[in-house]
Amino acid sequence: MNMQTSSMVLSTACKNNDSVNESDSEDIEDALAKEVKQLQETKTEKRFQAVLTGAVNVIFIKTNLPDSNDPTDLVHTVLNDMLETGCKKTRHCQRFLPISGSCHANKEEMKKLAEQLFQSSFFAEDVKPSTFSVMYKSRNNSSIHRDDTISALASIVMNARKGHTVNLNNPDLAICVEIMKNVCCMSVVKDFMKLRKYNIHEVNEKIFQSQRRDNEDSEKVKSKNQTIMKSDDNDADSGAQRDGNNAGSDMNRDGNNADSTTVDDATSENPDT
Image 1 (tube, rainbow, N blue to C red):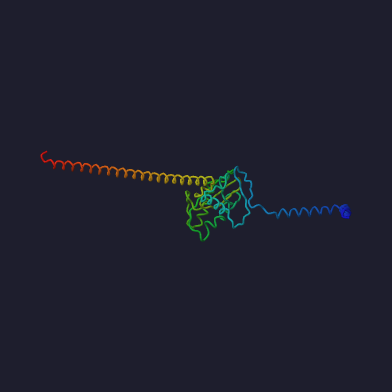
Image 2 (tube, helix red, strand yellow):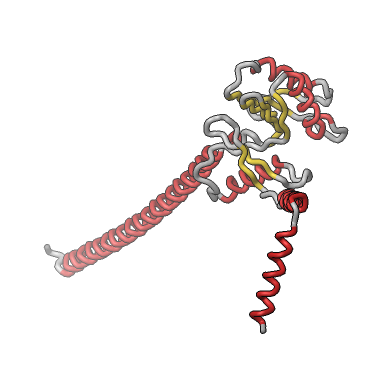
């Protein structure tokens, strides 16, 4: 009975399909296309996505983190944790630099982006005077001039009139400018020199050197302790030897005194001698 029912349903479906005209078929295709499009739009994006940069050995990682999660804080936390714990977190990544904003690589667009990014770091009312420097790097671009860019960005900071000064050796804040073809990426980062210019290999090398110094200091302390112990042993041996020599000298003196007393006694018994 079940087989007859199934056959009837299939037969009915076939008859209905035969009666569908071309316009109905197009309506179904449109409905399916809309549904597929909606599914694609509602599909959740990956939190981190690689984006082609057109520059050799440079990878741009796009993230959909909320605006409250600044990439500068994320990268600073990762590198600082590496420095404090001595734990290496990557093998193949040489430099890990956050990007807070990007624009077309031309003078006017870069100024607008800088004024926007510098608000919290250099222009806010509660900002204290700080030292800064501009770190410029260009790849596959010859239209943007390094000195002009650095001068323009430094002028924007100085116009804040908050007492900020330039320090190229160890700035409180570093303005990082990365030009890749016709795109400018920019960020303001802290502890730039402490974290080895955000170079992971340099951070790992600093960790290795620190561990090596600790091992050398430990070996020096160990060697010094062994030297002190040997010195104490030598002092003990010398003391024992001195005590033995003193005891021998006392015995010799006692023997000599005894011999002298015997001679005196013998002389006194024979006065004619």
